[in-house]
Amino acid sequence: MKNFITKLNNLKFFFISLVSTFVTFVINFFLLPVKPDYFICNNLKDYDFQNYNFQYPISCDQESYYSAIRDLSTLFNEGYVYQGRPLYILINSAIANFLNISTFGSVDNFDNVIHVSIIIFHTIVISISGYLFFKIFEEKINKNYLNIFLVSFTFSVSPLFKWGSFDPSNQTLTLLVIMLMTYLYLNFPSNLSSRTSLLIGFLVLFHRTFIVGYILLWLLFFIEKKLNFKLKIIIKTIKQIFIALIPFLIYNLYIIVFQEQVPYDENSSHYGQFLWLPLYLFTSRRYEGGWHCMEIPQFIQCYLIDNFYLILYLLVPVCFIVLNLLTTKYENFQELGGFIKFTFMMYLFYMFIGWYPPIRFSYYSVGHLIILLSIFFMFNQENKILKFLYIFSIYLYFMFLNHWNHPSTLDLNYGIYISFLLILFYVIYKIGYKKYEKSD
Image (cartoon, rainbow, N blue to C red; front, side, top):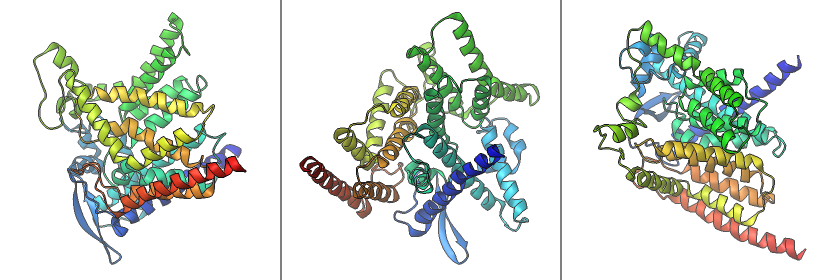
C-alpha cells in the first residue's frame, strides 16, 4: 500500500508538467510573444479550435514519423528513415490510439490526435527529468508543488522543449540521458545492476545516445578510479554494457532475419555522422556541403564556433550563472560536479559528429547544462526579491526567444531587452544587499 501511495504521489510530476506544457503551448501559439517560426524544415498550418484560430508547426519530417505511428509495419519498410527509433514510434502510436479510443474516434483527422500524443510524450520526458532532478538534489531542494512547477516550467519554456515539444522528434530525450546518467553517477554503485543495464537497453530503442551515455558513465568510473582495472571488474563492465545492448541487438537481428533487410541508419548513411572519421582516415570517401565539416582539424573549429553561438543564444541564463558563480560560494555540491563531469563527456562525444546544424548538438550537452545550472541557482538566491528578478528575467527571455535556426541566432526584441535590463537591476540590488549584510 505504501509503494502504491508513493507511485501515485509521483504522478504529480506528470500532471504538473502537463500544466507547464499547456502554459507553454498557450504562450507559443496564442499569446505569440514571438512568431512560432522554425525557419528550417517546419511550416505553420492554420487550425481552428472552439473559434480560436492559431498556427501550429508541421515538420518536414512529420509524415516520416506519422506514417509509422499510424501503421507500425512502416517501421520495417526498407530504407525507412526512423527505423532505429522503434520504441519512440511505438509509444506514440500507443498514446495516439488510446486517445482515439477514449474520444470514441470523434476527432476526424487522426493526425491531430498524433499531435497531442507527441506533446504528451515530450511532457513525460519533462516529468521524468524533473523527478530525477529532485532525486539528485533531494537533500538541498524542497519537493513542494511550487518548486516542482518551477522546475518543470523551466524545462518546458526552455528552447529545446519550447520548440521541440510540438515537433515529432526524439531530441528532448538528450536531457533525460544527462539526468539519468548523472543520477547513476552520484549513486554509484547502488544502482548499477543488470536491471539498470536492461532499462538502458530499452531506452536505446528510443534514442541511441543512451548507450553512448552508459558507456561514458562506466569510462568515467574508471577515470576517477571508482573502478579499477582488475580482470573481474573489466569482465563485469563488459557484461553490463552487453546487457544494455541486448534489446538493440535483438531488434536488429529481427530486421535481418525476419524482414530480410539490412537495418537502415539515416544519420550515418546519409549524413555520415561519426562514420565520417574512420572513412576519412582509411578511405577516400568524403561528405561535403550543407552543415558538414569533416576535415581534420577543421571539425573542431566548426564545433567551437557552434558552441559560441549557443552561448550567444542562451546569453541571459549564461550571465546569471556567471554572476552567481562569481558572487556566491557553493561548497560540497557534488551534484553540480556530477552534472558538469558527465556533460563534458557528452560534449566531447558530440564534437566528433561531423555535421553541425545551428546550435543543436552543442545544446545536447552544454545547452542542457546551462538550463540545469539556471534551475539550481534559481533555488539558491539570497532573498525573494533577487529570486523574483532572476526567475522573471529568465522566463521573459525564454518566452521571447526565437528558434535557434534564426539567421541571426538571437533576434533582439523588447522582451529580450527587458530581460537584460532585469539583469542590471539584479546586479544593482545584489551589490546593495551585500553591502547591507556587511554593515549589519
